[in-house]
Image (cartoon, rainbow, N blue to C red):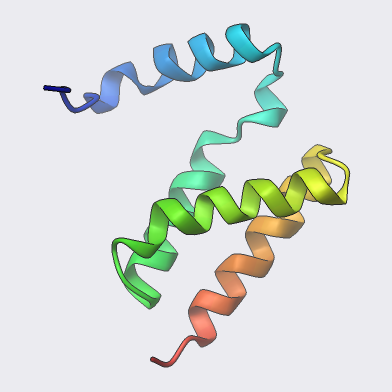
Length: 86
């Protein structure tokens, strides 16, 4: 059974991911992704948040994977969530 990650250990987990996958801090913008998840959860549905974060990462990678590509993909998903009407 897995345990939930306490908020105070999020930085440790992000550091472990960065180290394992050789990523920089700009590659893993924690607050940007958390804001995306919040906006999608509130604008669409809570279960849509992790899926949407995955899609934003996929889109950013296909666009080139730079920090600017990440921010642009997150902005696109956030905008879509804000305009969403089920």
